[in-house]
Length: 210
Image 1 (cartoon, helix red, strand yellow):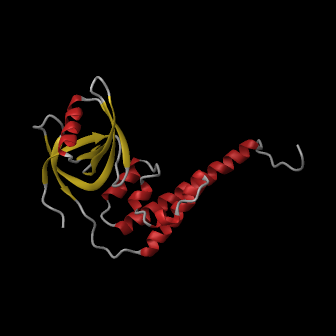
Image 2 (cartoon, rainbow, N blue to C red):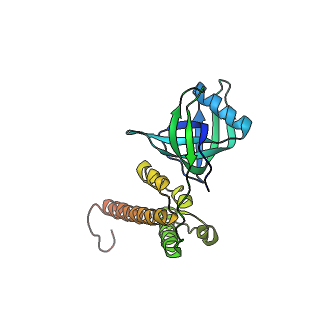
Image 3 (tube, rainbow, N blue to C red):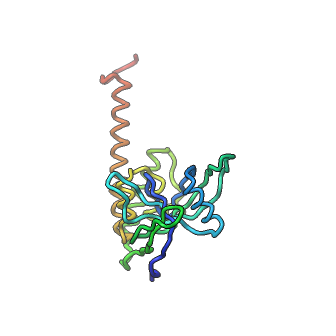
């Protein structure tokens, strides 16, 4: 069961959406975020990435843990790699700390019965997309263990789609969504292939030797 609200939880409003399990490189250059990251390093604590969209700060974000510091610059800037851990909901913004923070609650999925057919369809669509995009087949054992979040973290769907996944409280619902997204991406790749083939032939069907 989720615990009660967490107060003074560090928040990092950004123009990105993070997903649980996703590795995200960050470049920290503002003083307030340098302070926030250093505190997280000192306490081994988490902070939350929340999408700052054109419509404002979204309600649901993703907590992140610092995976490793890649580089510290002489002027104090930090390059680091963070990993998404779990979704949360912002209940209240707090402005009394030297960095953005808020009262948040971690959110959990509803107790839906897991549908293996949905997982099978999502894995098959993902495998086809990976094959088309990279000409490589994903490892079957690795694929079998991948959640909707894990698959989505490797594909650039756009921010609205990623936020939609983060907002969902059901793995079955997330699997349905990523399957649709994977199939749409496959169709776009097929269209690109047809356009490129048409361009190579100058729009003409060639017969015989050139």
